[in-house]
Image (cartoon, rainbow over all chains, first blue to last red; front, side):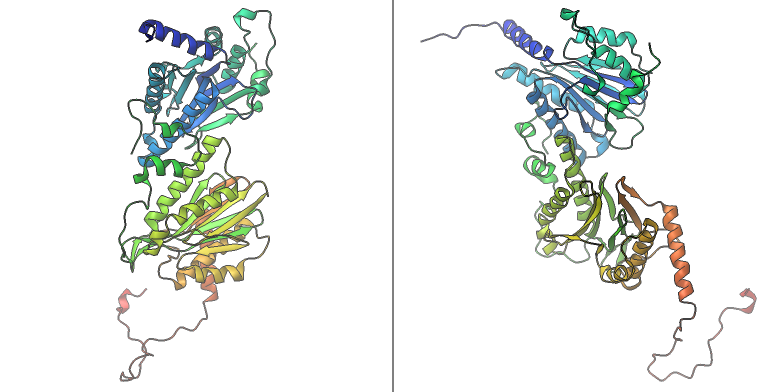
Amino acid sequence: MSMPFYISPEQLMADRADYARKGIARGRAVIVATCTEGIVFATENHSQALHKISEIYDRIGFAAVGKYNEFEALRVAGIRYADLRGYSYDRSDVTARALAHAYAQTLGTAFTTESKPMEVEVVVAELGHDASRDEIYHLSYDGSVAQEHGCVVIGGDQDTIDAVFRSSWEPTMSLADTLTAITQALSQPPQKDAEHTMVTPAPTYEAALLDRSRPRRTFRRLTVTDFVPSTQGTRS
Amino acid sequence: MTITGSRGFPDGYLAPGSSFLDFAAQHAPTIMPGTQPTFDTIPQDIAPHGTTIVALEYHNGIIIAGDRRATMGTTIAHREIEKVFAADEHSAIAIAGTAGLAIELVRLFQLELEHYEKIEGTPLSLDGKANRLSTMLRSHLHLALQGLPIVPIFAGWDSTRHQGRLFAYDVTGGRYEEPNFTCAGSGSVFARSALKKLWKPQLDATRAITIALEALWDAADDDTATAGPDIIRRIWPIIAVIDHKGFRYVSEADLAHANDTIAHQRSQDHQHVRVLEPGRDGPGNRLPSQGSATIIPESDQS
């Protein structure tokens, strides 16, 4: 009769966290930040069809990094959750806070009970009626939730990108200036590869805005033209 | 209703699929209209009914319109009910029939289109939307047979063919694409005649809006369940336009103006129409008329 090997809970959780973090760091970073026009989501994405940024509900957007099939399932679950809740009660009763709670439960359960944790990090952001009421929730692979103030970077080389982005970003910036700051931050070469200085051209960005000026469904995808003022902008 | 337990999203939330209807039927069947048990017979005047809706093509889109009356038997249940809605940004749905169920069906249909668009990242084709509505109507057949019918018109801009298209339905979910114009509801026989006479190819938007109003006016003239323009309360039919730019309602000011023009035209046309005198159809035992009596004192006449 064979005895199962003993692994301490600390070791088990540390291994799982390590595994998840490695998976997440392999992808490209997503930045979510408030600006005067709303909340902007942006990432480098060479695919036209496989989105990392999505509409969840009237004033709620979603961004994720990590394993595509895992965050896609979470995205779809979020849309179903929001639509069912909005249909059962009222559209105004669908909140990012409740959605973040549901995601946290799913991620936390997978982290502790499934054979492998989900290799994803998720941001759920809700557009407030003014900038002071914008809500941004950052969810980690282990189910932990953090409310972020103004901006958050997930995935990729997030610490470097976060530092560069925060050095040039202000919450009172316009959309064009925020996009400039985002493209500058995202085009940072990874620390390990300082020689590599190629700047990715604008068409490979995927970006969207929860637009304060729109009624009802506020989510709109940004196109290359939205990036034009930023590349020719006054910032030097 | 299941939302989420303490372990997060139930498995069904994470399964593939892009229909809200299918999802809700599985996970929250009680919130779906028409799933509760019903009775064998439902009195005809138990629920408000919406009446006449019309839709017609013009040279670069569709005009869709509805009057504002809901009736419950012989009572007017509502004077400002809305029967024309945006299904999504590029299509419209108008409803006649049992008001409560029909409005719920509209909510569900709007959600079905939005849900698909969010999950798939692309909207359904116009034919896809029209077919989806068929399925939803078919699921209400048992209610229609009990006297609670829903008869919608669906119209939208087909971005692949670059034209507006119209679809009429029956209570069994039968879907019929209509050229030129269509109408539904209790006043539709009269509205249809007006549309037949007035509709022509290549109408401009203003003319098409006037024709929609004229058709509703004629329906209201002969059908008690359809409201004409309410001049006292200034309630006009609701009219929407769908073209390549999408769905939008015609403004109250434009409707009031178009209504005034029709009212003026019709009163001109009726100026020399003979009106019968009272007393003509009596049993024959009244005294010969000596002219009409004056009951208003002379001092009050100005």
